[in-house]
Amino acid sequence: MRKKEKAEKIRKILENLYPTPSIPLHHNSHYTLLIAVLLSAQCTDARVNTITPKLFAKASTPQEMINLSVAEIEEIIRPCGLAPTKAKAIWELSRLLIERHQGQVPGSFEKLEELPGVGHKTASVIMAQAFDKPSFPVDTHIHRCAKRWGLSLGKTVKQTEQDLKHAFPKKYWNKLHLQIIYFAREYCQARKHNMAECPICSWVEGVIKTCTPVTKK
Image (cartoon, rainbow, N blue to C red; front, side, top):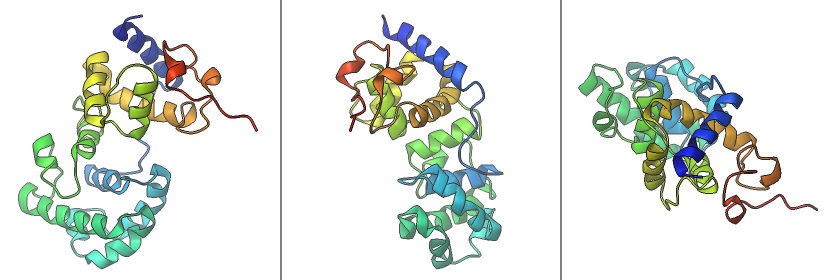
């Protein structure tokens, strides 16, 4: 089976399982989505969603955020990990949004990646989910699945992103980003992955070499 044929079969499975995937990070604006995505670095979405209501109750706009001290932000977001670094980035990017963008989140990769704490993956999520611009953000879940499914041999998320963009039509990128994340969490976990019960890994060509069946006790 050719890669594009395999990709299309995978896409149809994902579409059947997750026809309307929602953004897993709770937010109510482009700004709060940006902050939530920044906090999700090396932290689960579930944990971020328990912290952001406390933060956004105090500051849900750049103007409100810079009225807090970095120490106040750090104290609230501590359970998300990397709190000192993230707190400084949140305060500084909020200041820059006011100074450079009239308090609005910019809709371009270049301007987003100029903000503290905003790397390519974070910018890709914002472009895809806030501005509906074709992007294919790759996190560890997507990187793992792409390798297992034989869609990428990339050793970095950057290479995996390029491979997936070649494998799938651009019009599906934004939705697939979410669909694969949900699938990875439900069926294709990093540990104790049961190949036989995985709706995709159970048939994908070459999967035996890259998937580890669950170990029975």
